[in-house]
Image 1 (cartoon, one colour):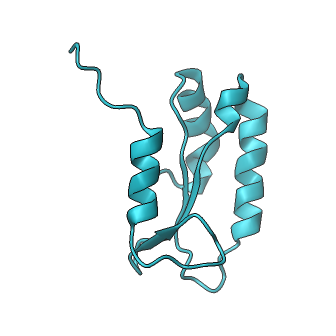
Image 2: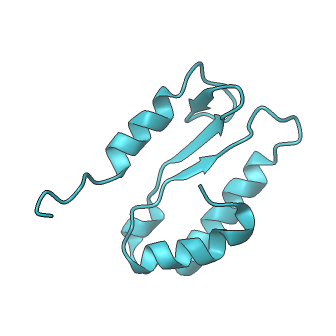
Length: 99
C-alpha cells in the first residue's frame, strides 16, 4: 500500500525493477470517493513511467478495507475480499525457490 502522495516515486522505482503493478483503490465506501479521477491519474502516471507495453497492463481493484470488501467493478460493491486475493494470486509472482 502506497499513499497517493508517494505514488509517483514508488511507481517509478517499481517499474524500473520490472515489478508487476497492481492498483487497489481503497475507501470506496466513502461518498466523496473520486474513483474516475483517481483511475485516470494512475493511468496517466503509468503512461508516463512505463517502458514496456506489459507495464501498462495491470489489474485495478476497488476496495473498502473498513467495510471488508473488494471488487473489480467500481459500481458494484463486493461482498468480501475474494477479488483482491484472486488478483494477488494471478498478478504477483511466487517466491524464487532457488534461495
